[in-house]
Amino acid sequence: MYYVRNIGLSFGGRQILDDVSFMINPNEKLGLIGRNGAGKTTLFKIIAGELSPDEGSIDLPKNVTIGVLAQFLPENKEKSIIDETMSILEEYNSIDRQVKDLEVQISSGKLNDDEVTKAVEKLTSLMDRKTMMYDYNPEAEAEVLLKGLGFKSEQLKDKIGTLSGGWQMRIELAKLLLTRPDILLLDEPTNHLDIESIIWFEQYIKEYPKAVILISHDEEFMQNSVKRIVEISLGGIFDYKGTYRNYLVHKEQMLEVNASAFENQQKLIKDKEMLIDRFRAKATKAKMAQSMIKQLDKLERVELINEDTSSMKVRFPYAGRSVKSVAKVDNLSKSYGDNKVLIDVDFEILKDEKISFVGQNGMGKSTLLKAILSKIPVDKGNVKIGDNVVLGYYAQDQSDTLDGSLTILETLEKNAHKDYYTSARKILGSFMFSGEDVEKKVSVLSGGERARVALACMVAQPANFLVFDEPTNHLDVSSKKILKQAIMSFEGTVLIVSHDRSFLESMSPRTIEFRDHKLIEHLGDINYVLEKRKVEDLRTFTLAAEEKSSKKKETKSSTLNYEERKKLQRKINYVERDIAKLEEKITTLQTEMSDPKFFMQADSDEKMKQLGVHEKELEVKMEEWEEFTTKMES
Image (cartoon, rainbow, N blue to C red; front, side, top):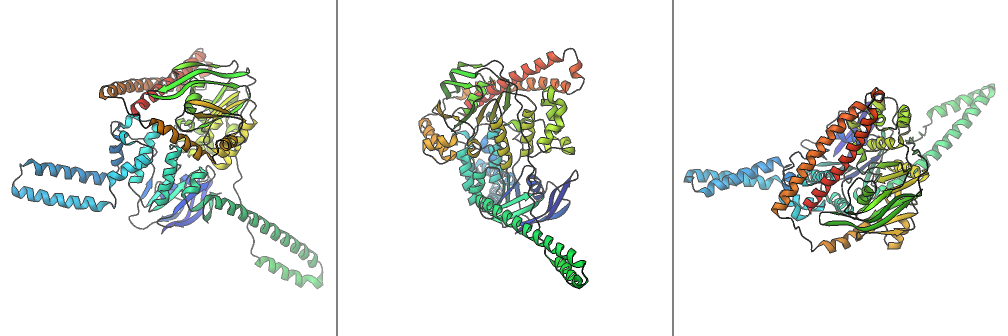
């Protein structure tokens, strides 16, 4: 058994964890849930030995291994996908190298009989060690893991440098799973996975022969992966053996019973105290009053279970009315190499509309969104943005792009409109960052806290056209509801890309489905679309579409020969060099702007324009890089 005993930890005068205790069986699958900032990631760090608690301990048997998903990308971009995955097994790889070296020596014919005998004995010993080291074949297991996480067989020899950051994180996940630790700690592992990979991963976790502790705000993933829930709330925990949905029902019933018992007992106590006060005044009743006092002293008091009801307050400031046609797309086509994503698309967004993009992965939702925002070049067609349109944009990786070296307050001040600069602390307070919290470095924040900072930056910029690309990543259930209400209350135009059904429900009266490189318009919300398509959920909807799409692609194979790949790699290198230069220029300008005296300089307006130009150039270069690397992958 593994024990978490009486863990207590405070930070900056705030109690993060308070007397947290639970045990976990060696093959149990446990879901750790709680509000953003409740202490889930902190507890993970304590279990992993990365952080020491103020009180309590983690008691584990000797030699128990703990695996945590790395938060950094592989450094050697020249390694192949399969070699980088196998690199995690250092001892196994060392033995493998020794075996191959001995095999070469023996087959060379240059050794005498005595040397051959010794070499064979050593080779046999090494082979025995290699066989005994694992109860599975690591090379075969690495392939299974990589394919389950979305890689194709023909990709496994490709260099890591040809992959985007999200795909490189999948390699890090495969490396962790390959080590098969006794306790697997997974913090939001599905953020970089598509629906198909998530479904595979759910099954993998259920069949994993050892312990898994999982943090996730994906309710469907949690429901399908674990059989026990531990919720951290106000430093303490609720512990329930059962599925996620059953826990929600159980918790609601438990809170109702607790509240009712507390209320009834308080009424009883109040009535007895009134009687005691009345009887004290009468000599004949004094003995009875003393008896009742003793009864109250012995009464076991019902403690009211406190829930963390703190929540962020979101209101997106409105920048005033725009023209009727906010954005118009005419005959737009976009491909990444041979991969045609959108073909001859026509689309218009009207003032004050709320529109959702849904559909299978890779069919162009984010591509069209970025084309509308002029963040990528298109192959054909054009996009026109209406007059007086003021944009607010939340990118899919928005929270991951924040500068970790800045504090929360510095981050907001850097991104705030000048009219909101003096209100920075007030805005952060509405996102549950107050007092000393605002001085925390972004680098130490959890995923949910980073997401709140990114949303706060949007609130500090008035807009009349809000665009969200997967905004619910990292947000807890309560925060999702609050964000949804804020979007629905916004006076202007809204465009949303999301896979989260509960978030999209009743959100928009116009839903655009992406299928077969085209747009299909539905005059209803996501529930209307699913009912029309006769599927029950977005997973079924997405997988069915992917299955259809994959059948069309089965006969296609890579047309890039060695020389073409070499030329493409050269282009990637050039683009990466340009990106590095632009990032350096942007950093220099941003550093200048962080000086409070910057706006008093005569050339401040010119420098702000330069920053805007460089940022737009950087976006174009990043899209070129994505296009080249996608072509390399294909």
